[in-house]
Amino acid sequence: MYEISRKLRKAAEEVGLPFRGSDKIYNSRLAQELGIWSESKNRADEFHSAVFKAYFVDSKNISEIPVLVELAASIGLPCDEAAGILTSRACEAAVDADWALSREKSITAVPTLVINQHRLVGAQSYEVMEALMAENGVKKRA
Image (cartoon, rainbow, N blue to C red; front, side, top):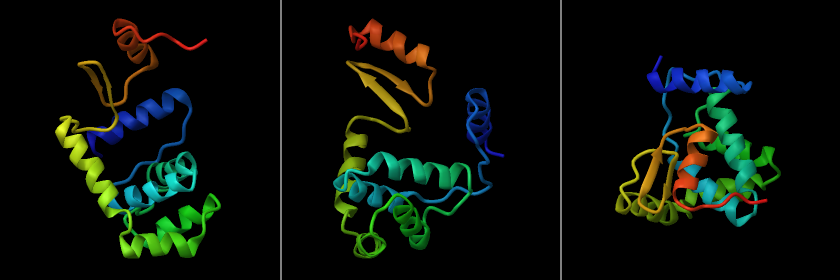
């Protein structure tokens, strides 16, 4: 098992989340493109959650168009439109722009939290993120 999967499994167990993981790593490019489209439909959070569960809990291949269309449908997005977005690659340029920005900002891992010139790379505890924010003058909301 990959080291990252071991760490994710441990973190999920600590907070009571399901995690099955996978022996394979699937290309998430099309999922990113459909994610851009789901933002335009105000369903990005639901879509990203569905993709996360499909990949990390159900071990589905999120590089396959039928899988992604099924995920879109599962959150109430139109299947035919989702399929059209994927086959036409309508959101390809938007994802390219996101990747270009990440290279420009030297972001090489997800998640990366940047506050001022300080960064946290990878999954971090709430306490670590809170400390970074406090050190950089970010106040908690009431």
